[in-house]
Amino acid sequence: MLKKTFFLFSFVFLTACSQTGVEVTQTQQQAVAMPDTFSADAAYAVLEDGGNAVDAAITAQFVLAVTLPEAGNVGGGGFMTIAFEGITDFLDYREMAPSDAHRDMYLDDEGDVKPYESLFGAKAAGIPGTVAGMWAAHQKYGSLPWSRLVAPAVELAENGFLVPEKLASNITRYLARTREQGLNSNFASYFEQAKANTIFKQPELATTLKAIQQHGQDGFYQGEVAEKIVSFMQENGGLINHTDLAAYKAVWRKPLELNWQGFTLVTAPPPSSGGVAVAQWIGMLESYGSNHTLPDHNSAEYLHVMSEIGKRVFADRAEYLGDPDFVEVPVAKLVAPDYIKARAALIQPNSISDTPSVKPGLKESEDTTHFSIMDKWGNAIANTTTINLTFGSGVVVTGAGFLLNDEMDDFSAKPGVPNFFGAVGGEANAISPYKRMLSSMTPTLVTQGGDVVLATGSPGGTTIISSVAQSLLNALLFDFDAKKSANAPRFHHQLLPKDTIRVHPGFDESTLAELTDMGYTIDARRFGDVHLIKRTSQGVEAASEASGRGKSIVSAR
Ligand code: GLY
Image (cartoon, rainbow, N blue to C red; front, side, top):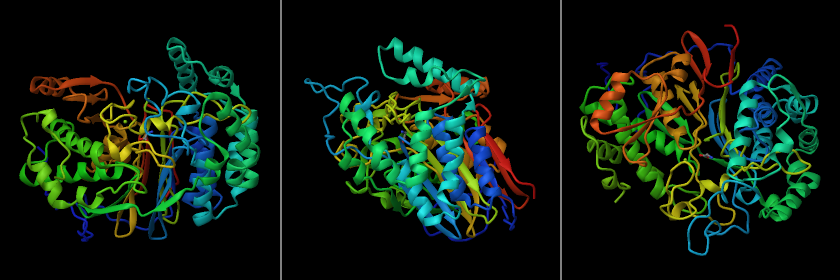
């Protein structure tokens, strides 16, 4: 058994000592941890050019729209957590429901949720936020010219790139699945020719990116690209109109910050559920650890305790979390030390709590993609971006060459009915015009004494929360290096399905047998794709999870 002394999880715990003895020294190192090689090389080149972490993030975001169409996008949205010259910041470029959206828009005459309508086709798309987000990021923090930052994406779309095998197989699998389900779109005509190890060019997307390169956000929300989006909507039963595009705004929010083990967690506030959830998860583990010995990493007890916490986290998520511009989200109450302590006190080391009895406590392919960047000045970003499921809504804006999101499925189409990720929701996340749908994206930075010591994040719908919490615990509580922190097998539990733990390959058979004996069902399916940067007194380390097609680069010390 590993013995750890726990500090009380708190908003006000300010001592800068570290449980894991991290002492940050000023280095001139810079690093990127990216979901593919093209974005890694392009983002790193920006840093080498003297650009900062936000500049590199803008380049990465646009490159991923070309080379990682499963999740990279201009037709989606995301969140960016930023630490810049000692200031922390959070950029919300989440999609919004169109003005013609309404709460029952995905229900049939009997009041049942219509299958696929919120997941596939033009009507599944929220107003895209990515271009406005990158433009806002550049206005506030950019140092290199916008045109230079968009240029690598234009080049890759126009002249093509060598298709990685994983992309080609994802396209083949997606086409087979949608054909089997009778879902038709123009996806095949755009992507079927992307064969492994051949050059794939996207001339229409190159035209869109050139408009963005030349005119900034107006190149997307106005002019020819906007015209193509609206025509596509009108021809295919979608809702987004010109007024909606003109109305879209990226929003600067205050990140959720709290103190834990001598570190400051800087993470995603609502409309993400992720920051609150990660805070609750690590807080309840800390509270449990003040009464029990911390279980060994990935032991049966560790998975059990973390699953018990997960039940409580997801019960709260379903009840309380939504767009803070529309509903009051009781964030402070949900992460208050006394509340966390009271919730954790109900966890028994040897028995599973009855699922229906776990209620909200105050009285979500899983695609999406994440990257982390640290520049030589110590500024850092963690950025998670999404079109929701792999290849989003499966429809390409004709003539503009980009896939639209199917983010409307992240709303609660009907209270109590699970969305694609099995997450249920209620009033707080009901559909309303211009409302942002609840997200699990959790781009997270951890600072100590004002210096960023960790940047982490992952795709994976609701499993994002587990990937982020566990990569953070791996790096800072168990003190694993970046590679092990990103690659150690992970697990996920989210209240429903009842008593089911989803696990990566790599767990001991005996651990899984112990959990089965306790009454858990084991669902062996990999999730997430962590891209993490860790900074210690020895220098900067970066890691991209080995099961994906990511790449990390760290400069020499
Ligand atoms: N579309 C996945 C999320 O935002 O959580």
